[in-house]
Image 1 (cartoon, one colour):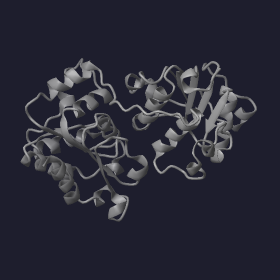
Image 2 (tube, rainbow, N blue to C red):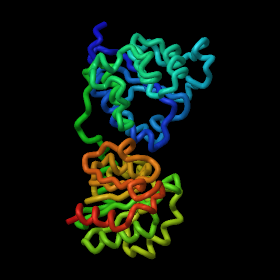
Image 3 (spheres, rainbow, N blue to C red):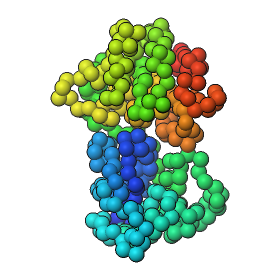
Length: 338
């Protein structure tokens, strides 16, 4: 069989697991896999649970042929001698996205690919080395996490990787519902003040101040509130009378989840969010986005979206979100809305 990407029949990708934020973050990698290997069956395997088999199933469907979760691959070094069995079938190319050396050997033994790609142990087990594709990559680690994943696609395709330049397709049922919830006429600014990790929340009082600034600019504040942030609702309603909560306003039987948030994002002029799952959902819509980071560096972890402004608490003296000054974010908001 030719090793040209268009002739590859099956690509298996191994990952430990994906929570919601991880799955959204890795979408450019999935899209590049499908663009690079257009005819291949792409099988995503995880040791544990993955959002690609759950909440992100619809979003991942155009890019992944099959998802096999909870394989338990990589649970024990003994798998190097007694490899796990999988339902992946014969594998032309296996891509290991994790970096623990013994686990890479366990993955290779379990999948038995014709070509194995892995960055662990400085690409020791990889069938194609970085210098074979681009000499400038030798011993130079990509700064952004997604760039490291994209390099694996480049190695797997021997330098012929592609990216998908089109916006992510959001099904019509979500776009129609978003248009009903945020109809034409008003101009909207989205605010997502929550995070599953409370230490990654900018103070709610500052989001309320931003909402008032948006109102002064003639925009309608729209709040996105996750299930763990319902306690914020009373303060928001008191501080921003007339604020919209479109997910709460949707009919009971309406489709929900990340694709609805992304569709609602397409109705906005601008959105502001913490480093959170909601921030990554809004990034899918390619709305102009301001993201607020604390412990994690945006240079490594920011989503790949074309209109992004980031603030990092470390630039203001420490990892706490509250170190990010309100006036800096207000200035960025004003600059986008002027």
